[in-house]
Image (cartoon, rainbow, N blue to C red; front, side):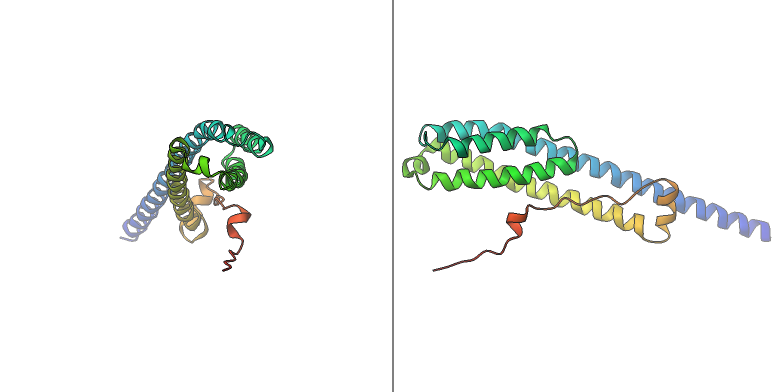
Length: 182
């Protein structure tokens, strides 16, 4: 009788371990899928920028420094390899885009150009989609990290070599306090 009880306990512990391991694998796969979605959105974003820069060039010929900075930031972002590097490069790229759109404020004709407005709208849509994909990625990472750090799932995670993963962070400029003056 004692042998049956011990056997049942061992089977339950093994089943729990398998269930936790399978959930960790599923979450890891979801994190990889969301990282790939981030890459796809970043590629769409970077592919759109040359068209945007060419549109602005016609209106702001003497603003080549800003346009060059945007292209250099785009190229650096496209050359990033790890997800962390891609996120940091994307944040730097976002800063240069802000300067590009600030530049457009100086040119009323450019602001009224339908091609520019369409490109700006497409870029805004991509930015919103990218934000949602990053939020999903961070939610999956939160689930993984919670399982890796809480007992008893942390025991299975340790045996299977699952580790805590980093979250994607926003750029420092976005964290700055916004001052509104009238």
